[in-house]
Image 1 (cartoon, one colour):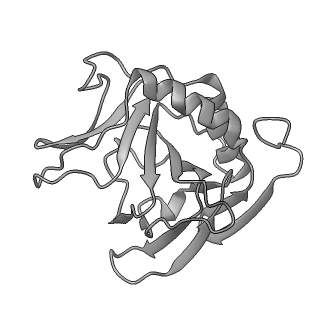
Image 2 (tube, rainbow, N blue to C red):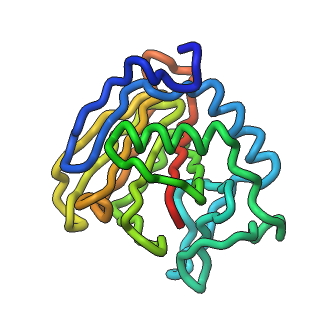
Length: 210
């Protein structure tokens, strides 16, 4: 793909109510380069949860607001608790990609001000949860997959009982909102890609309106 994303021939599929998959939409090579640059400023880390445990996967943020977790709870903050500086500026190409993907999925006014980057390694997973720490739920969520493939689980309106599983590959973009904005979702254990055994990491870039 020559451009960051292919606006001419996007493959869009509604995989669940108000939930869309844009297959191979993003140029992961360009995005990964930016992820590495951002993580050199605000490094990946595991954060403590209110229950005293630590997140199972490493994460970092960019943009005006970053998602954080500690003994006080889950929330968005403008300052990185490790560097004590503002989170790195969201790259313009990140912001534009999220805006354009949301528009293609029918969410025309999405303007992200928070970008969370998760780093998965083989054996990592993400349990069933809702994205509900934002100040409003009118805006969709845009999520980009880079690297190792993953199985995205949609549990629906309850925490248990998988209603849909979606195989996400490098460069795939998911957008969900509307009635599905608060669906429970997760990621199954990341496995080695037998077709690409040297690949050991998955990055997930998620855009929200904090």
